[in-house]
Image (cartoon, rainbow, N blue to C red):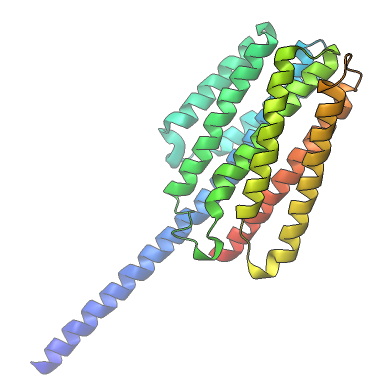
Length: 279
């Protein structure tokens, strides 16, 4: 009888251990899949942000942009094809984006500058919130990742901070093409300057990193801070405070893109650390 009891207890303990291991493996698999989806989604956000900026140039009179827009559209469609996964099959945010994007590519030629900007921005914000949703659904939050306890700031604040720079790129590029900045546009640019300054400063302070990555982490933040500061200075001096805008639209677009690239480098570094934590 005693042997039977001991055997039963041992069997129960083994079952508990087995179930815990299986649950742990299932969680880790979901986390790794979720991270892959997030990277693809972030790529799409970046491409749509570029499409918004170049569309602003085109609708303001730049005749050299058509081929760039076609290339971006093909890239966005290709990335979206890779996200045909069960997790997003019935997701309202994802379905809304794919429907909205297909309609925008058809209507784009006939849109006003303001409407194009607004339509792109609505889609981008929708994708930003979807990215955060995926992170939560796939256990990529601080509750499940104690070594990166501020990972939530990567999925929300860092992505939205980058989007504020993206908006300033689109708005400023259009202004640089038409060589004039209206009073309404100056108000919007001033608002974006404040948003960029506040969100980047606050977000950078909240990002965490693995101890061995501290040096690289700090360098990336310094580079991003420098590029955002340079962009803000150009917006103030070359778009807002001048009677006639003379800055080249390609130069402005590239400068803003450099700032976005530096923000994206921080995002990619955080993702790299997450890969390490999950391995």
